[in-house]
Length: 206
Image 1: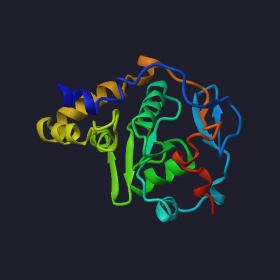
Image 2 (image 1 turned 135 degrees about the horizontal axis):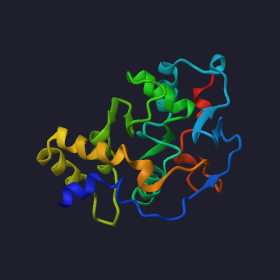
Image 3 (image 1 turned 90 degrees about the vertical axis):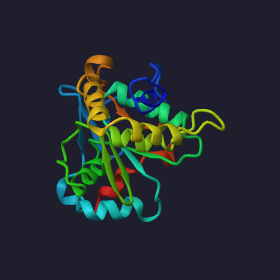
Image 4 (image 1 turned 120 degrees about the vertical axis):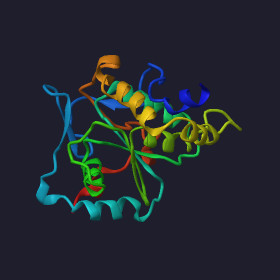
């Protein structure tokens, strides 16, 4: 039971104020369409680097893995807050699936640029989706001193079959907007506290 709760940390993210959000303005290359609650790039495709080039740039000087999350999903954003709190050493980075960097990383790993159906855990060696992504992220988290979650993640990987893990994940992901709704704001670290934790979307530009 403890192992199952661990890889479902997305679902247990507390409902609290987010670290930093701003309204529907141009922020680091994205704006929010308030009619559809979707993020759209303010950079034309002619000014964007090919996906393989973006992959090289995001890991060129920083090999920390990247979590691609749904930028308009309240549940997902609360989970990001939880991950920030549980990752005191700053081993993880973040980018919205809808950002230029996020879209490029999706494409280079064989997914559609507009596919926001799953969280994606991107490392220099490859990418993971659904429950495998959650378990990969969980391995990097330390909610309390001397309490790393890596052993629980390994245990969940061994004890819970992938199809069952993904079934549970899909149940949460498919209902994430119903559970906690959407926002029409683009996540932005306004006070700079987590500036190095969010991938600069300008890395996707030529």
